[in-house]
Image (cartoon, rainbow, N blue to C red; front, side, top):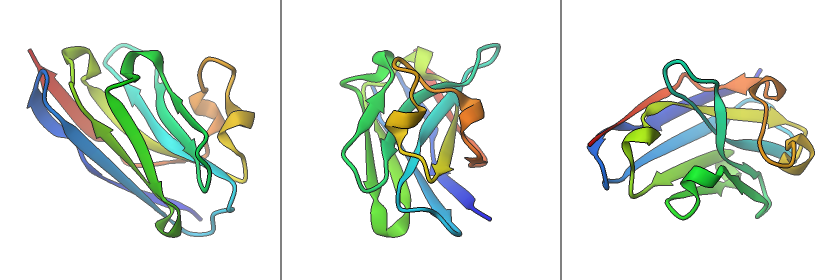
Length: 131
């Protein structure tokens, strides 16, 4: 069984920065896709930033490119999300996601990811950006 533990998030004014961390425990295949989704009230969960563990293959949704940075510590099966220049529209619950045994490219639909393709989820971290 895989368990994801998130930390970070919080409240900040527009233009500020926040960070998220997620560490996975359990049996995880070396080739795994791990990263972050978010869900705002009344909206579908969307992939924000994902990375294949042990690889530099990275995905960012268009709205966060240049502002968010995902990084990983492969030894810890951990991913991190540094969020800069935050905007009110970044306000959402952010969820860490992991699909063990699949690389991110194979999961991608070319333009985004489906939450239903990920088996393991963190507890969620609230990010609130005020204007």
